[in-house]
Length: 151
Ligand SMILES: [Zn+2]
Image (cartoon, rainbow, N blue to C red):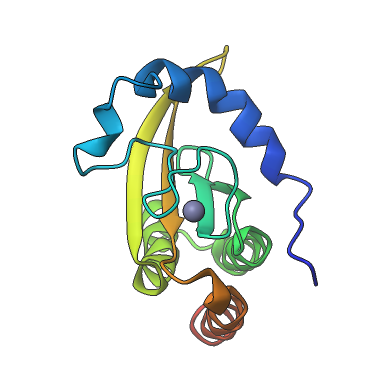
């Protein structure tokens, strides 16, 4: 597996306008410690980079990029399929629990809102890993956990 994910370019291009308007090259704004939304805290890339674990639309509950996106979406479909019929199924709570699993594997995460299109405002959560060389191990671990905990 060479890690190329066809989806990854899409969201970056879609959000580039927002990100560049906030970071203005040369302004030095991102050198103050906090990375801007959509910008990797490790390599400062605003494009997809090896640190990106998961880029997820929390409004529509759908992962759009990162190493874990495919497994994450599969796990979420399984959860929905298994519980969707239950009257007491708390979809929001279940989604947050799944995100917590990602959070526990990630070194840095950030949340931001993207205001755009007829769909209105979407919230995004982005998770980064400090060590891209462990990405495969992280992917395996998440896959295993998701299968065990969320059936
Ligand atoms: Zn990076």
